[in-house]
Figure 1 (cartoon, helix red, strand yellow):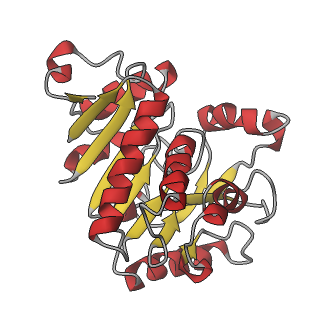
Figure 2 (cartoon, one colour):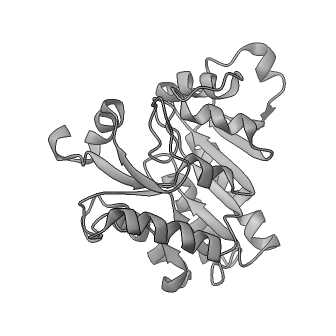
Figure 3 (cartoon, helix red, strand yellow):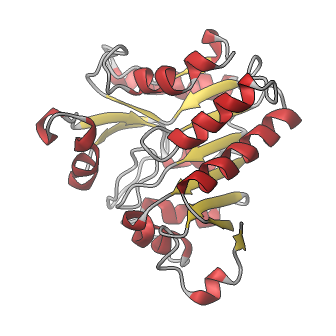
Length: 252
């Protein structure tokens, strides 16, 4: 596991975008797993600017999003379909047929999960997966639990997640209680993973992620088992990392 500690959110976003751009340049038909939420917004902005400057081409990139709320139509302002198009897809040259996001309004949610897994397999698997990190250590919407599903599945959102996401809605009551998410096994099959974290509220989860103890109570700890994981975090998110661990990290 590699750790890049950046000065602030802007530097974290720039570094992450540079890493994604490098992967696309080396494999123009990259299968790219994407995250939502506030953390990757800066990275998406940097990638859009790279595209506008002719530095990067998304025409052959295939994307798979981690998750989607259940019950929100694609045109709802808080759906992840809407988020991705507003903040990224509408500003680059990715082909519509190459965009994949779970359908949270599907009549048969279990079938939707199976179809999503099959689409990932048919694409040859995910080359690079971008992850955010929940305050409780969730990745995707894989919440702390005694058991964690390995494949794309329907999940009940934890209270901490609802509380963290209520800022995007008028109230906590409006936050959907369920979502479709890639499972831990699906995420771990990605050839490379980049996890982003920013802010003091993520510091505890980062400490738990890297200290080496595997537990379903902190789903992100499973990343220690992956052969190619890079954490790109700012100084505030790194504030609880022990000095010994900092000495092994790469600072920008």
